[in-house]
Image 1 (cartoon, helix red, strand yellow):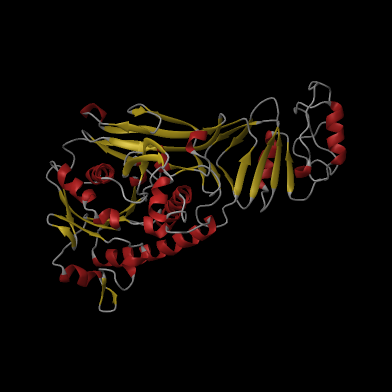
Image 2 (cartoon, rainbow, N blue to C red):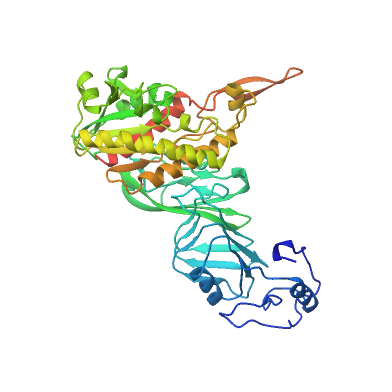
Length: 482
């Protein structure tokens, strides 16, 4: 009988003396397992030990030393069976579990890591890795999960706010999981701002200017499953005084709506962000094109495709536009990249392809304009309700699949550009309310039940208020980088 075929056992006498122990640093034999701190009776332990054969891909852990040894010798496809002991397992340093390794806690052990825990890899489609069965996990660093099946926090760097402008970080936009968000306990730690059921928010005052440590942790049944640390950076009203930057916003229909760029104009104070492009009505200009994917800007039909090739130089000349060092290209694509993709694997491949074309676009722009700065907006989540997708697609697409796809897109885009000089990320994904920032309408519960309820009607396109939240996020980022 393999370990993973064992039935669940219980005992009425968990304090019996056990028949064997294991020397730290040594592996158990095929018919012997250390149960020195596992609360089962002698008879139960003996019965289990007699039935178990230890396959070569199983590693049994009963001490801190054995955990360290297992980590040092980790190999693709292993399962680590970690038995409960009197104290928490202590691991010093960063712990990365990847390559199809599963760590299984037996008897609800505790784990304490001095460093960062990472599940899976950001730079490969082989991202299977799990830690399960632990009562509590603590870490002094982040708990990062790159696996599509796990719970992940899509925060990639610092968070930017401005005095007088509300900053929002909605959990539905930054926490991705195949379980409903309501299954988790979420804990934000920050000396400034407020946490409610849906978000962390603050409208900074002058006394909030500066950098404040920020973290968000996610727990499932009291056990830590994800954690990200960051900084909340608040800019003063006078930040960027006298500075004007041109901003070319490249995007899909959410950019074409014009509200995001209009918000930049509306928020202008001592700092000015001047939107440019071929679309929109002056002074609210942009490069938003409905239905565009990232790849659309790199092929025939792109505004940058001139004379049978990508030519950003000619694009600027033909449209009497100019950009200089320290101006901005803001990329707000991603929604249409995710489309009707129906699996994690297919979405990973799609996102890698879209990232390739974004890299091409960024390359020609950087080659043309020395010192230009690039900011990629992390794609917003869909509206909260399945009704919003039913209104658009009938029974063909689900809200949950789209939410997962967009999280996969963020991770792949971050992987591609995290080390690219002059490229930064904007947390647009956390800026918008998925419940109240998308269109909705009232109607009957059903034909025969005339009680009125409100249903969301568009899973893709925000309301004016939702777009304005996105614009505020972009504004605070640009102002902080003046």
